[in-house]
Image (cartoon, rainbow, N blue to C red; front, side, top):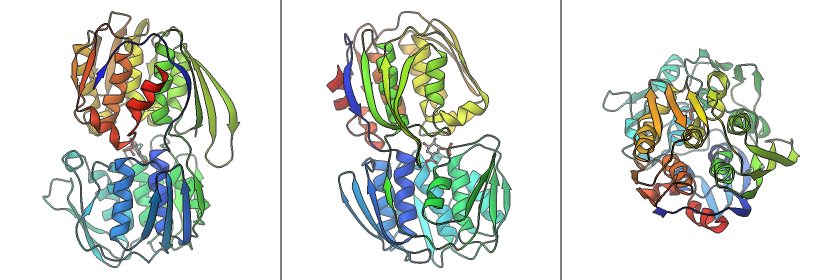
Length: 423
Ligand code: S3P
């Protein structure tokens, strides 16, 4: 994909549905009695992997574009899959489903693509073993493929060493099949979509500061789910609107859940002009975002803010390259275990484009304001890397070529088309 400089970006856009919420709507719908209708479902490869896994376990799921209907069979309605469950590139699918499968009455095997087979699973194996689960890594390397022999589980209290919604959700979902309450305390609050949606489907879930707890064996009932636009996808257009001179973009119906809105806070701290319109606080909060080009300055991104913008940090690194002064990102070692090592990959690619950037063990330091030029860059098949660098290409000197650009299909199949429509 070749990206060239644009003069300005103008217009309105709706981004696809939230990836985390789309996954959960299918999973919880499958475990509920009756029909779950999902509107504005993210029709990207990751969420299609979740649909594929539940179809393999006997759940009837029909889909027409972003409208999905799941005919759930209740907490114990899944059937043994005929073969290995394939999660593709999706960390959310493998980690959340592992919690569900650990409590079933059948055995299963789960795997995914080369990237998923390198990602750490010990973070879920540890709490699941404490719950008495029979789950193991086939090659003994704490990675996928995972082998699971479902059984009745023990309720535990788990203090997670990482702020991870995938770990928290895995344990809470296993808690559906436990003999007593299960709770998880995390070092900082990660996205709470599981807690909100499980409660909406009828589970007894409580949230108290950094601790979420669930009671076993609820009767889950199918519901109507309106998936808000994904703030992680909106982030590319927010950044593009801020960076490209003379731009004004309205992004409609974006999820602004406070456990996900760190990117908005960081943009505003950097001097970004973003106005929230039509704020709706029912269920998952949403707003329309009006973004105007702004001159940005450096900032520090750290601590409890990190889990609230973990997937947007590649985009923050690009913003920082075009901002005056220094930006420091720290406490973000989790970036090394995403779809790629995002610290190494962003440092490699932005350096090629002339950016003054240094990698650290838990983040990056970027000295902004130097001229940035196009280059041939490698996405390492990481969708968020490709999209963040595409935005950089809109304001770099000379053309930018992204190799492995198709990986945007994971979370945003129409990304380049939508970007083009504004330029
Ligand atoms: C997700 C949680 C985050 C995030 C991922 C989606 C989820 O991962 O990076 O893209 O849907 O729960 P971690 O839980 O590993 O931080």
